[in-house]
Image (cartoon, rainbow, N blue to C red; front, side, top):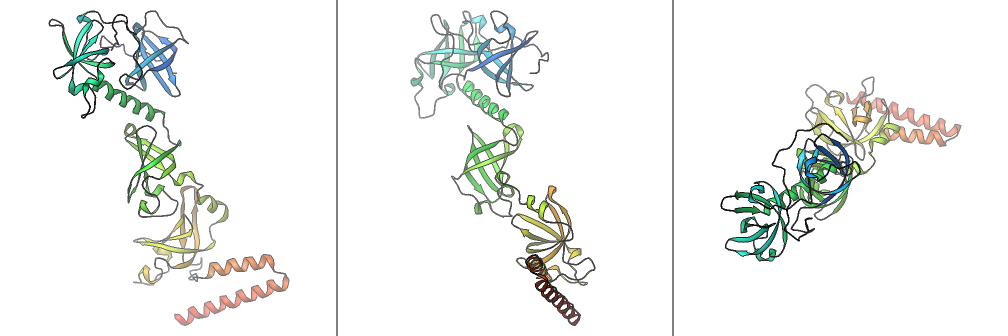
Length: 400
């Protein structure tokens, strides 16, 4: 816990209030700020530091307490926003306001709704009367504000006229702050690498939007849906589908949360690291042509780049004349970086000869037969291999 000295707060520290004979703790429910239990972990000057939960700490002015708290003391608090990574706290219990001079704009007070008034509701803050406009009641448009009569509400003071003993308060602002605080708390508890479960709420070609937690939404980009390449997220997920996802990044205070589906599975590149090597001839399928070469899939989810300079093109010859999307080819691995998921391929042997399309398959068959055959079978296998190589060389000469 960081117990650094912090700037002192002034008289704008908000306070709850209650009337005589009423409980000074806010009532739990939809009409009050959420109350959090916290334990004091340190006192430094006027600042009292409080542990509210895992990765959730707050600070409050020591003057909010009747007596100086000790480490380990437990109190109930409400959240008032964040300052330098710590929650600004307020005690859920405070002394009652008894005079208009104590009423301050911006304070959060406990208001008891006593009756319906023209344009809103009449409320009492301790012994003081105030007005809650209908537009600030926080009720739905089709709901009658009279449903709040008799209830205790957490409200923010909007206006105070001490001479005329009039005040205007808002419940809507408190509800908005409570929702924002809850959202910030959940975002603050989220970190890259966490696994969350959510429901697909919207699908676009570039990705799927997923709702998870309490009001959080993240985007699974199409490139993070599968280790294989797809152009449209609708090919992989559907509306309403439940997914287990990994948190990739959190940006702009939780406004942009990146999620990944393919990160929940082992990467196919882990196979590459143990089973492939530079110089190896492998079978592949051309997936797409680009200006600087072609991409070749050598395994589900594993693509390598065939640079145009490694295609063995004749002067003026187009790449499409040698390879086309969907074509089966044999290629030589010239560079391999499984950690960065990068692979460079060539259609040429080291001596510049063109690799035949079925060469990788023939090599695989040869090695398989060599492992299982006896001396006679191996000699026959070598003879077959030599004849094929000579035949391929002869065909190349005739073609040139």
